[in-house]
Image (cartoon, rainbow over all chains, first blue to last red; front, side):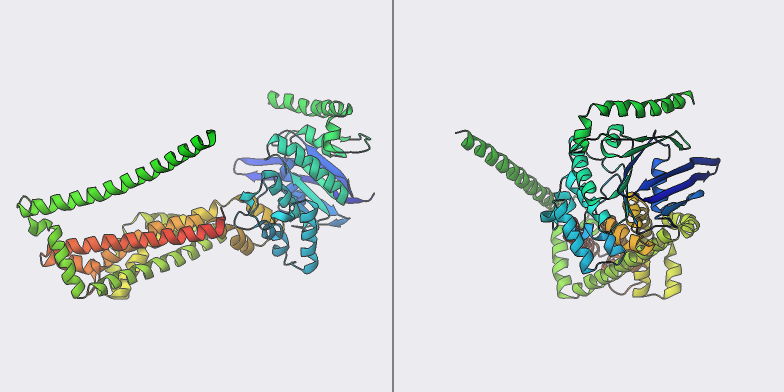
Length: 261
Length: 269
């Protein structure tokens, strides 16, 4: 499978009145088409900064981002960025919320709107399209936010703790649901999370970042070899705790370092 | 059996709620009636000087006489000046707040001036305003504007600045420009800030208009109050103050109604 995203030598240094604050240091990785990659790391290690840089909302101090071997500068329509909260606009109904991205990009064509209709049906919230966000459950809102992101047909989906604002039960079931749908659509995903079980249950690969400034410590290929693959099935698989311990060990060292500081 | 019992409880609760509401309304009216009655009696028995303190029956009499003359013109004048000052204050306030939000450095430069202008009692500017725009309706509207503008700027700018950052980031991730962030997120998010500002401003505009009418005017409720004071017709002053209170309440209620209507449109609860 060909590489769709390449993160090359990315470093980020913030300038502050009392000195420079390094956030990321020489981060390199590639993501293949259709692959689901997670980035985990201690809090404040620059995970979200990395996604902001890939999305084009922030510029790296050094390094470059390539999508399908083309260097990107600034916000690219090839990238869909989904944040922690659903951020649906409460004064708009679901339909005008999910078409917001298309509206911003002035792409409200019949073809695109038909695609949004399809997505609403695919994610089973089409009957609520004339409702308002406060009339929907947290899980439904998150699905609507995902549709809003997918409506602009991004080549790669960035998920920044996209499910962590949900309560535990909703989260487990929405993750299971979204994973199956994403795999069905063969969408390439890059997810940032602090939740190790979530990263194992969804990913093909988990990248562990070190403590500040974030740099790649280790990459783990996740391979369960289950026929009916899903986050719930993975959680019940005997290999699950093995992966958890491996990643935990990597992060545990970081924690020790943190307490040494 | 159980269902009937639950119904009774519900009915009892609703009846109690209604009863309490009626009790409050009746007692509010009683308080007003007692004040009017005590005032009237004190004046009748010469326990207070009805020349200075006036008395309800004289106020009613004056009111009838004023209606026969040109009370409506005075009410119209004050309302007109207040509404023009208020609308201008809101429009210019929002426009300036948008400028401050758009240009951060400009906001930093303006900050101390806005703080000083906010602290300054704008009535002190009265003579300057009169010289600047001439003695007349313009000066009065200008005074109302001077009082309400800075508060609107400060409140709207604060609202704009504190708009949910994640929502703005979400929109920017689609490649939205600053104008799109403003019109699609920042302004709609601040509808309630706008109404808070409007509720404060309608009162402030009225203060500005009355102060302006004290200084320069040939008509208006402020003019009647000053005129009544100058010719020692305290009943005229009292009646005008009473009418002013009613006018101010109506203006405030009008904004509440508008707010209810707009918020309903925007929030769809």
